[in-house]
Image 1 (spheres, helix red, strand yellow):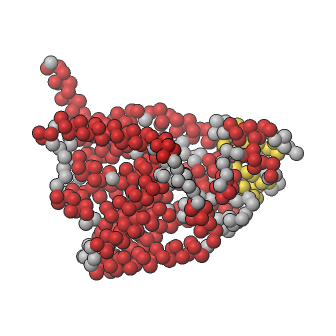
Image 2 (spheres, rainbow, N blue to C red):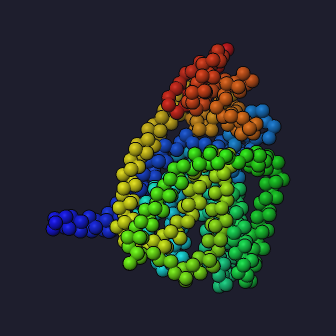
Length: 481
């Protein structure tokens, strides 16, 4: 028995040691990098990169809504494309995708730091990194892994919310002590974040309602300024018919999913959430005589009077609503769950650090296969791109590409025209996998498409093309007649 007690004490010492927690944090960062390596072939970022490339090649981000051969176009507002164009203009071209993913990892870590600062405001005291880091690692890997994968792909939600937090921080969370200059700059950041994502309008509404419920000179001034800046952004976008078409009208007619489809797409998120709630209730029941729950009246009042909480609440509702429409999935649901993280931490902050550390370590071990998969996908992506780069053609030719393989097709030196069949399918409300219906009507010289069974079948049935490269990620086909 004494050996068991000794062993237990040693494990507890390890789980609360600063060295072990720092090691856990280091492994988590390496895990994020490994995940990111496998994201070279993902549409979220690549459609934004396509817009950047087209701007430098043709002078505009968006194709015309009636363009028969539209280039890759993101469904999100163009803020990220504008941001990435700064780096392309600075000379980062060949490795623009890798550079963008590296920036997205830094943005993700910054957004996690924001959750720490929000948690401190809720419990009204500073929080040790050595306690918060294991908590947020376990929370992300267990409760919101799908959101984490999307965030690494530079999905614009994270950037928009990060700008929103920065704006609120600049104006001291709309405290009466904030100067007019800070209110002006803060409102510009808060409203300006709308250029990254349409859904961010919900965050703006939430802060606006906060200003109306808790009026003061600074808050009413902030409300006026954010309304002006938001209106200007929407007017500019509305006046540009191409932006409005691709980022608003194309999405407006998306139908709602059936209950069955919603359940299937969010099954894992619902399953893990229910399991976590049951575990928490069981744990608290076993410790009800000495409950670790931290939920006092003062904490609720601080949360209620925090502008971020109002904005985040509206954004959470918008995230859940997005999960109900075509295109929505557990990533939308898990984003809403992630934004509740500061409150969950505040409630559970009295729990021993060793519990969070043990959960984080277990979650990291369980993610080893995903890490390996990310490395494998990175090698496949490089293999596909290397083949495209190695092709030597001295005449202009057209390329039909898909969004998931654009990281490769963008490297054709004589690519005068790039036609993205994902963009055309999105515009025409057609099924992405029906490449066979599209090929007879177009004459591209090259096909660089995802290696999906229907894509390969369509190419093999079209005697105009031969496959000249293929791996698990993509197919390159050449026109022979």
